Amino acid sequence: MTFVLEAAYAAPQAVATAFASQVIQWQKTHGRNSLPWQNTQDPYRVWLSEIMLQQTQVSSVLEYFPRFLARFPDVKSLAAASLDDVLALWSGLGYYSRARNLYRCAQQVMEVHGGRFPPTAELLQTLPGIGRSTAAAIASFCYGERAAILDANVKRVLTRVLGFGADLAVAANERALWDQATALLPAQAGLDTMPRYTQGLMDLGATVCAPRQPTCLLCPVQPVCKAQREGAPEKYPVKTRKLKRSTESWWLLWAQDPAGRVWLQRRPDAGVWAGLYCLPVFHSRDALAASVGTVALDDLPVFLHVLTHKDLYLHPVQTQWPQDKRPGPNGGWVEAPRWVEMGLPAPIRKLLSAIE
Image (cartoon, rainbow, N blue to C red; front, side, top):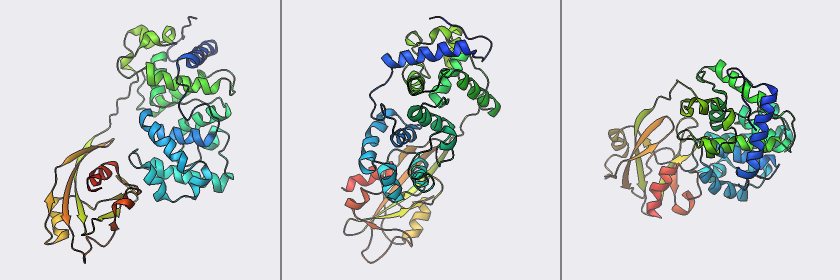
């Protein structure tokens, strides 16, 4: 079927119906249909996968998702757990605010909604950590609601199809794209159309409509894609505001007592690695040295940990600590079998693994 979008950024109903049909048919035969969080209408599993997949590769989530379900098979068990248990299972997946919101959301589902996830995207957005796109995905997959998603992959697909060249750094332009995403939805809601359409858009963005060198010849909506006709799909989407990266250096006090235990502290509730357990952090070598007094120090190789907005240079400084002293007023000695089960930042876990 050949169809053409009419007018800049517009999607007439007849065109929208054809677009949705093409996406649905393609997803049935070429999309991803065997991921462990698919083929279910259980909102707990769909919600968990959607939160894990935010800014995270599918390959990583494939490792964490079954482990998380084994420990917390439903929202009730997750809400009854401790935040430390949740952060421990999340350790290494990154973006730890997701885990804290996940925990808060589970508790709110139990306390406010009687253990059942709300059945509409509008109500789902009232829960911690669930934004408009995530709410729409859950409502679409589980309840067949006619709700548009607009994650990074889908923005790329739709801006290219529509030739939407407005700057998405401007809030009004992003709202306009939301309107177009809604206009392109299947005409009818229902579990026979919405889950495949929603998954189809996700799959197109993840497997065909790549940021660089998209495989346009394999795309089911190539005939309608303005960016492909222009011969410049990579210029979409347009977003001029760039993230400002910063660089920071942290000195980590790696103190061990004669029994081989490590001194760990909980990080503050805000900032990098909020709420996780970590080696004590200092912002200079001199500050670290001043805190330990006359204890001998051994500087280990510096390594880089890359965060979304920051390059973090970590300087581990190891020391053997006397039996009768504490490295600081806060924290505690933790033996290896225990810290393995704690919520640690990935680079700290990797660093400490040398003493297992």
